[in-house]
Length: 190
Image 1 (cartoon, rainbow, N blue to C red):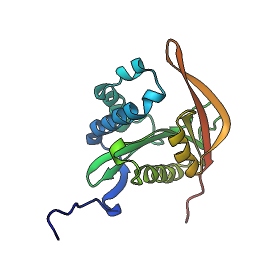
Image 2 (cartoon, rainbow, N blue to C red):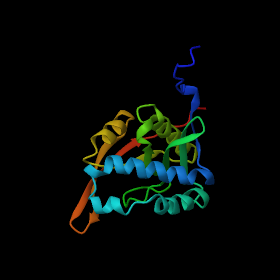
Image 3 (cartoon, rainbow, N blue to C red):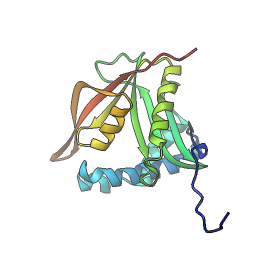
Image 4 (cartoon, helix red, strand yellow):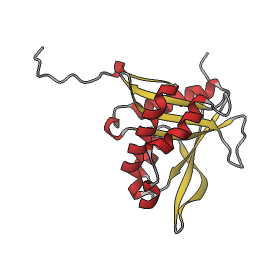
């Protein structure tokens, strides 16, 4: 082999696993980079200015080390040993949800430098499997209505608008319109 050849990671170097305490700093860093890349079109600048790795780490540390229940999950996508994405899921708290069967994908982010490598699809598939194993039968996710790439990704995975919409206040004079997408999780295969 020519020493000038680039070696690229193969699909075998990509994996998804439950998050560990040591993953908290990379999870926060991935989230900060992903938000800074996507959010300027969705959130006001002052909202992004308050997002720091340290602030994000506090929330992720609690979610990973002290989840509210055994039905909560945080998973990470890895390229080799590096964390390049994450997903978090929990029992759905929407007023019209059945908390025993309905779950919510609370977060799913892939580092912008590692997008289009299958990490998001692997994460979503692993989340669906984890939720099925924990007794859930429905997956819901709130998606910014203006985030077309995220909407297209979720639609390609089988999530569809269910008619629910909400507005989140993102500042004194700004809101973010979200649309809820839903999918029925197929039962586990025996």
